[in-house]
Image (cartoon, rainbow, N blue to C red; front, top):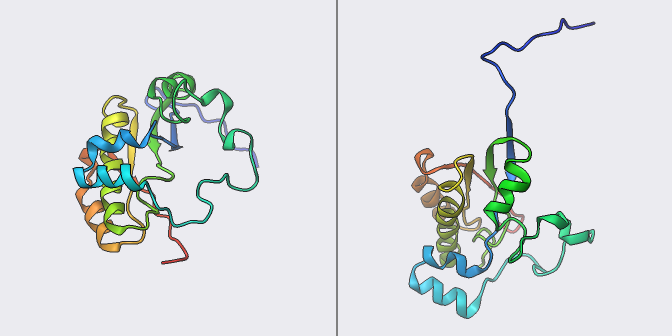
Length: 177
């Protein structure tokens, strides 16, 4: 069956919404302004202790540039850490009107120390707002929560609201819970 051609009216238009933008911090020190002194010192002294094995290794299958575009690497830091490059290569180039930030890892989600996980999750949420959402009105933050601590997750979630620029929650249930 043929569907009659529908014409867009002047009040209708197509927009592009990217629901899968992965921000990254240049170095862990980018989170220091958002962490209490205790956790800054902890992070500097001990680093992170992630729950999955081989966390420093590339996932299988081995991909060129760890699955990232070769031209997405900024002069310093990993892909996803440079807002100007993201604007030029993606937001502006593709006409993206809204972009949802989805922090993939190293944001407290999989940290073994539950108190540090809660502090790190809050820091990443605040960092997303300051480094990405405030300077770029097209972006919306995805809240990061500590996966292994339901009480900290509830506290983190209730502290975030639509007025802060946080619009979604990445909830990756793990089999170890």
